[in-house]
Structures are given as C-alpha cells and as structure tokens.
Length: 148
Image (cartoon, rainbow, N blue to C red; front, side, top):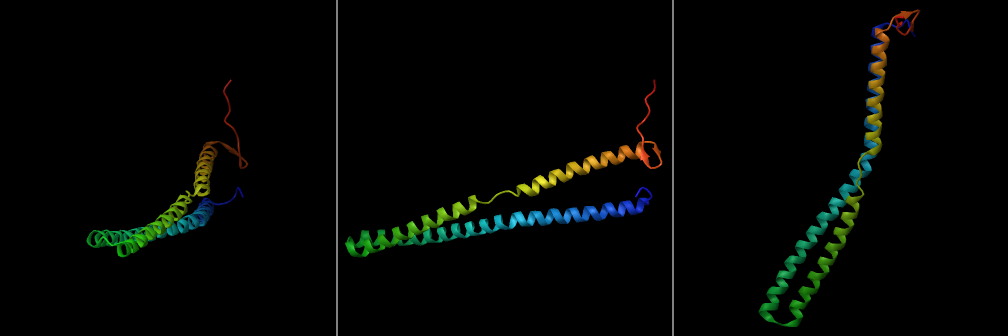
C-alpha cells in the first residue's frame, strides 16, 4: 500500500472516521435507551405520586372541614381514612419512582470508548506527522542520523 495516492489515503481515512462516528453513536444509543426508559418510568411514578398526594390533600381538607362543622365521627372519619390511604399510595409510588430514577446511569462504556478513540487518533496523527517529516528510503521510514 505504499504506492497509494494521497487522495485515496484521505478518502479511506474519511470513510474510517465516518464508520467510527456511526459506531460511537450506536454504542451511545444502546447504553442510553435503557437509562432513558428507567428515567421515564421513574418520572411517571413521581407524577402519579404527586397526583395522589394532591387528591389526598383535597380529601384531608374536606375531612378537616367536615370535622370542624359536624364534629360527627362517621363523615369526617370516612374522609380522613380515604385521605390517609391516598397518602400511603402516593408514598409507595414515590418510593418506586425514586428507586427507578436512581437506576439511571451515565453511558460509561461510550465515554470510555470515546476517550480511547481520541487518544488513539492523537497518537496516529503524531505518528503520521513524524513519518511525514522523516527521510524515506524505498517506502520505509528511516530514523534521523545522529552527528558524531
């Protein structure tokens, strides 16, 4: 391959970089999709917990109002029991949502692969520059001569 034209070499490098970028994007997708799913489920659980908490507060407000007005056990006690039950449901959903959101992780493999790629590209570029500056004999890079 030492007889390849510079244009062909650049074309090959461009195609390799495109392929590398596509592979990096696919790796990122494969890591982020499960995390995004967990985040979405956790956010939905937080939303449901908030909804039930608002419902519970509304019922607790009604229970307190009926309790103050009537001071009768059956009506406000019924509202109070329902309100406490809704708060328990909200607490359970909130804990489930929190545990799902906690499972969201950074795309560690993608970050590590990207860092490795950058390091390798830098090393290849430095090696290429060194090879371009060195004298050549029959297509092989010869180290510079040391003066005695």
